Image (cartoon, one colour):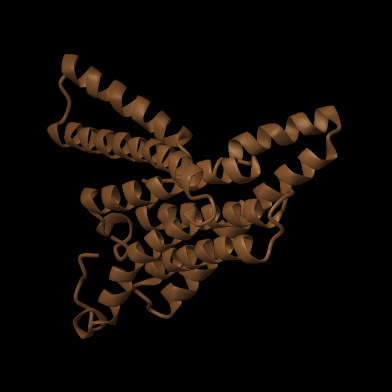
Length: 248
């Protein structure tokens, strides 16, 4: 799931990756909003709030939204630096390491918030940290899938779903190439499942954070670590290191 890139990936690889990380992104986005009142995976909303804040002269809103956007941007840049460095060194598990890093940092952020930050009041670290990690995750998924899959926001996926659904309906009236129709059906299934997983993750985040606010992000971080470990362990096996392809 975290080895193959772009043309080497199958529909199954993209579906597993997209659904797994969309669940995480949906949960983190909702938990971030419930904890600090900011959407940490939705930069469209933050850009809108930034513009409104400018018009109304709300300096705190403007600075908060700008900081969230920059943090998301920085996370995407860090992912790119890591992936490029990994490629230069022939590291097959670089994407697994990126997701592992996200999981470790997310769990660490929860522990820092729990033990070191004041229990009340607005703290800038949690929302900025979550935005940074969502940028890291979205860039990882975008690079490994060749821009087929994104997991931290649904705007583009709903657009793709609308296009693919229209193509599917159109093919019922006007015959098309069977291979093209099969690809449309595959992408329709892929994006509909990722959207459903993002919604499901959001629901899990709403209920989970309400029940366990102190440890919810720690749990999500452990889930990410569990997703990354199979690829890292597979990369450590002699047969994988010698060049044979891995299914992960």
